[in-house]
Length: 235
Image 1 (cartoon, one colour):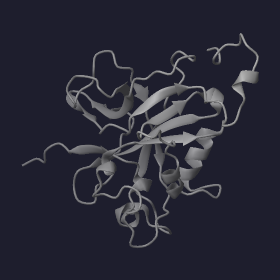
Image 2 (cartoon, rainbow, N blue to C red):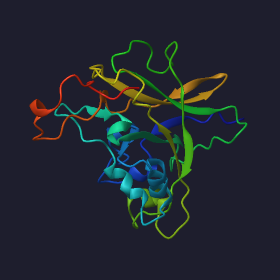
Image 3 (cartoon, rainbow, N blue to C red):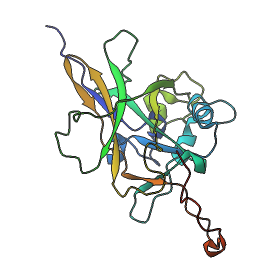
């Protein structure tokens, strides 16, 4: 009797599987991470964290979510404000030990993510017509977790060999009008396409808005600024 197809699930990125961040019993365990970095070398910094190089550690990912608005919504700002955003998640098999599901080249599977309005209608486990499919890339996670922690138990114990990989992708915040804050709430859904089987969609991310340029610093006298200037950067 042959085994059935592997049951797959998207989760928060593996470095967050600790009791003081999301924990495997938390609803946040299924939510992808939206990471905010404030350097033009954002990708190098992110990969140094996941890879445990340059004095960084995968545990640093826990400090990357954006500062939320009072209602808990994340404002995502333009790159002109030196803010860059990545989404990160892990893809696992739903069985004891929740091992990673690898996506080797030529497997016929393709990981990506979509950005959709939080209130979008349609089935929760399917893509919507015309959705833009943004690529996800695999990155190994270094061994970093202290003994007896959840992350150590699940393959990331410091001093050993990590068995974990995460997927990450660049969130294109500046695809819109730079002068007007879009009030629409959006979410990110991670996806694994695996024809002819149905796609595997992850749980929605935190809700966010495309906030445009950063607001003026506190205390800035806007009445003293020259008039007739554009409200925001040109595309």
